[in-house]
Length: 147
Image 1 (spheres, rainbow, N blue to C red):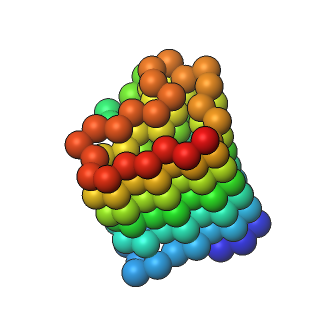
Image 2: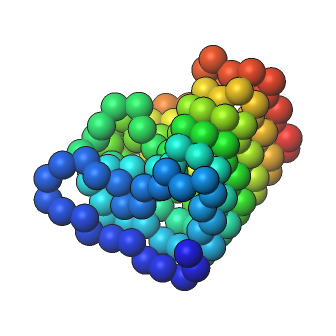
């Protein structure tokens, strides 16, 4: 997907703005906002480049993120901001290897970045004004923070 805006997916429920169980999905310069559940969720290989999420998880479902993966994922120059629910992380990874590079996590209701993955790399990210931690590594295999 390229240059697509996903928005407004109902007044009730907790469905994601974008959900994928495909073997591989790539989003480039997409925006996901004003959705009841996760902005983006995927169980297999996800690649997001210069994507943005805001006002996601309006249902305030526990342990979730605006960008949420349970499999391998790469986030490059993405922004997760103003996801205000107290359970909402900007980026939430709970699966395979994840790489979060040159991203911004701003004013999220929980952590900016929350990672419970087999391997995690966080490089050159800005995390600020989040209600909880900037970065929270829990139950992580090898982790590396650069810059």
